[in-house]
Image 1 (cartoon, rainbow, N blue to C red):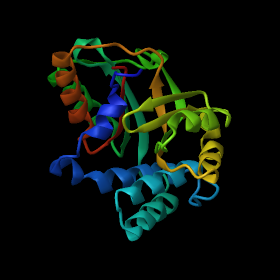
Image 2: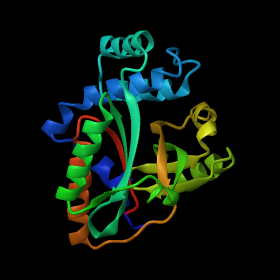
Image 3: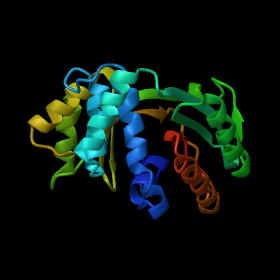
Length: 233
């Protein structure tokens, strides 16, 4: 992957627009509420722990976080998780994860976004076969990244890539918490940690195609109900 940028890297490098930043706390609140359905204690619910850590990294106030947990645990199924699959410009495969209180409305709005962006919404399974659920960590590089990578490999990770933003590490989803603890115990700094859908096969596109695709994906991400967007470019 050296010398190439895939969409996850592009997303980290691009600054959030003012409009997008306006709904960051709302998106984090929804992610926390969805995760809290599995229990309101972050010590025993790692998905919730990850959601809270990501919210704190964006300076979301503690009161907002606690309100989201309380709302989810007291009111139950306020929000529903929904996954949509489709194709973007140039046939790029796209998976969209959403949190919504009205699946019919959200599905129609996402369908419209795909069509306006030069793509098409597809049925379940249309592209998900090309993605697999993985735990992801972005680790800040030390002065000796080669030695650092060897240390991390010995922790039982599945894949590791040296990118411009740090070391991108993939693990089995159920090993994410365990590996994160091991990485921090040896003194390495974890910049990001999350569960995500990793494409099995990437497609290369030209710069012109890339600009159009990234604009389309960013439009999807700006939708209030959409939590995460994955693409195989």
